[in-house]
Amino acid sequence: MHRRRRGGRGRFPIQPRIGRKPLAESMTPEPRSVREPIYIDLAEAEALRLVDLEGMYQEQAGVSMQVSRGTIWRLLASAREKVTRSIFEGRSLVVGLQNENET
Image (tube, rainbow, N blue to C red; front, side, top):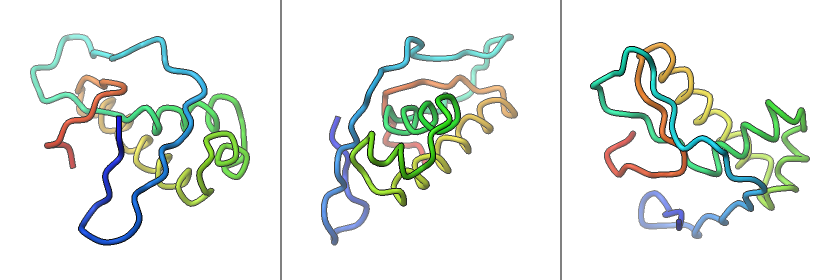
């Protein structure tokens, strides 16, 4: 998976190092929702794992993933929003796939 820059200018984003791929590829609420699933990037899932599960500081997670602390902050904010939206809207959460339509 290659990350794409947003807009036409600037450098290409650094591909974060993923230490461990999640065992689950998706989470589906019960009863099953027919709404569009929410897609969470592997880098977002890895940032969540390192900071929220392993208890690392954002700086430590950045070193582990070979990206800046600012990138970790952005990944965490996006991942937390997606997980929360999935819970409260009853939508499936799919890990590791990207949907071009997702905002």
